[in-house]
View 1 (spheres, rainbow, N blue to C red):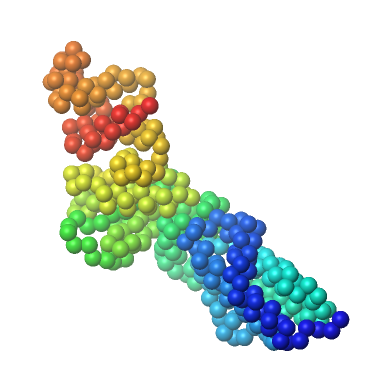
View 2: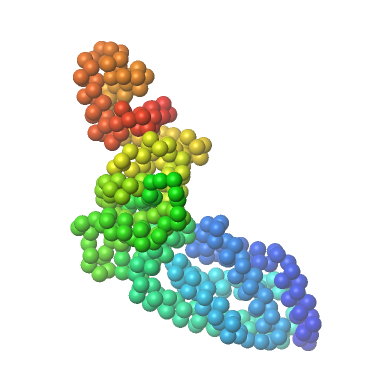
Length: 398
């Protein structure tokens, strides 16, 4: 059987480049067969499709012309590798994705040229093996160089890591552990994700220096500092806001630190490390929607506030019973039923004296129970915003 003429290969190339189903098949196969890619959120898939489309066209060009990768191709591959190294995607997974794509490419060519001559099949195999070998070498080298650069500038590396966590580019704790291990740090677990902004009408772009200064002010004493065992805090910016990833213990001091700077913020402490993106969305939405009286000096909005606000906005991130537990805390225990009764009477009656009469208690006894509620929930029933959150929680509680 004779080889396909160049014109015939070109016809196959044009047909495949023009058919969007080919790129879709490549992306689908990579998404299904490479776990790291299966975990990518929708915001990253357009980038995968763009790289797949470029790779498809270049490889088909090389097959049609019996060509080889050019310096411009190698620069692009190194750039892709550097980006993947920076966002923590393992090089083994990236190379596997390219091998899966090459298999799909071969199948698609075979489907369009069922009588492919041996010479054309050999040319295709030779081109793919050579391209994959070159790609592997270039990407491995670029990964190593990027790892060295990131390790040398650890603050920047941690900022990039936090940016990726906020964007939801890491979907497993294992991937996070691998990336932080390359930096010689541990991510704080439990952690506090703090989103903060200056108080005032103006909302200029937040300077990274301001976010870094806040991070330094919130440094937690006693955090291990042994190389390879350091618990890493990090800061980045999103528009007019600072976003900080801190050890969970920092949440206790954050309100006072922000109050001294005339800032306000929301601290989320109840999400796992693979849900930092959820924590950021909760905190940012809470700052967007919380009424002014929710921001008392020295007090942060918390998980409970954020979930109540999400519930009021019609897009709850947690089930109502979970929101109730977040707000009420120990008050949901059967042994605290008398406190729940006091809270209900106080909210319904509107004052401690009226609630005491409803419950046949002395007013001082009722006030003592309100103080116990404040101590157990960190929510003062006399504060308008906190009373509202308590009222919502006791109303939706099963």
